[in-house]
Length: 541
Ligand code: UDP
Image 1: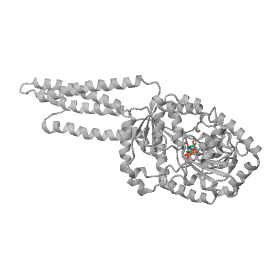
Image 2: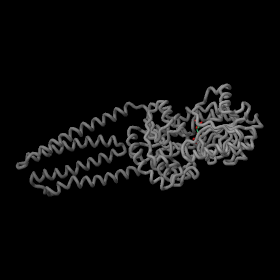
Image 3: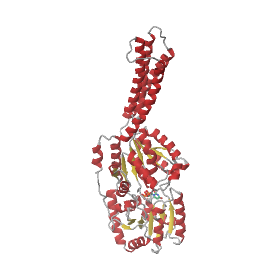
């Protein structure tokens, strides 16, 4: 905030100097004046000079003071222009009364027009901003997200936006089913597509690709600045949304919340992207909502400001009804799974770091078990290539692997399964599928890293295995397959924990508290009363 003001003031100072030179040039060039005028005409010329000087200084000062809220600056500038022109006309009239001087009518008419337009324009702008403000009860939030697909971050945003649909709008950088989902819950959504070069920059992009993407990013940034001015808070939900929305929010003079759904570390992001993210978050965000302690720790370890962070996990609607036996039976049949087969579900997009290949490898050691891979390659060409490799790998398992593709209704898949597996090879930022498995009262096996290790307590609410170790995963699967009583006990304990910890309403309240805090920073106690400064994870391993 301080840096912003300093930069704004330096810019204004330069503008002021340039403007002064323009304003004073004709006066200095055409008129003679002394600092101690004796004759009235000289005195009037002298006043004209100082009026130009003073009015420009006033104009600059007004913008200076109002900087940060451009709407305010514009309306004040309009008003000021009007009053200055009025003074200029008066002076012109006084000057023309001096013997030998003639009235410059063109000057007077131009002045009059400027005066009327200035004063009326200023009043209209003021009234408009007052009307907009008085009609609002809750901060107006502009959500930004880079994708049109439905990943975990987007599903979380859907739940947040659903709770404040009347006071929010969304801006996506790509069209897709996410836009439809947002519109279905009543959130006005606009798609501002990124150019080809910018949209292909992924989390691992190097310098060359990043440089090529700059023109597209700048263009989009300006559009976001324009949009952001009508809102109280900008809410960046993804990395690219932060890179574009962070500077845009600053230019628009609006506070920014960054919802961090990623672990900023090697494996997830290139070094360049890590630095860009931290720079943007540290300088543009007023709050960073991390979805787990692991996400927060990685952010801080990478140089992120700890005081910006608050940890809010994902929230889930607790279903009152589960799928019927008929439903799960017919789903099994449609997938080609024998009715009595012991079935492992792995839900989530197909991507190498999600570790579907680890499960397929482990399955070789678990005879008769079938696996359902629910999800699709959502984001990159690499993911699509990986999906093809999985199909090849599955051929070795003679019909025991079933690809279900992306489904928007996932509950029947969880209900149909005997066990839910999470096998990410890099630390998972949160791991929604783990909680969804717990809420379905299924035993869950997850990778011992990141957010997953915060959600599951080993041998209490699930089993944790080391990431990328198919033999360990196979052992855990065999344990659950052979000890159904143990499987049932941990599943029931997990259900209780998930219900108590991840209820959506509580999470929505916490997010809302952050939004209110950021929108009106004079009430710091609101946030700390709802979100204690440091909270240990409820079921850390
Ligand atoms: N999911 C879905 N349909 C699918 C596969 C997955 O809706 O076909 C959902 C899944 O239920 C979960 C989310 O996608 O809510 C994935 O979130 P997670 O945190 O596990 O992974 P992310 O995509 O955020 O990396």
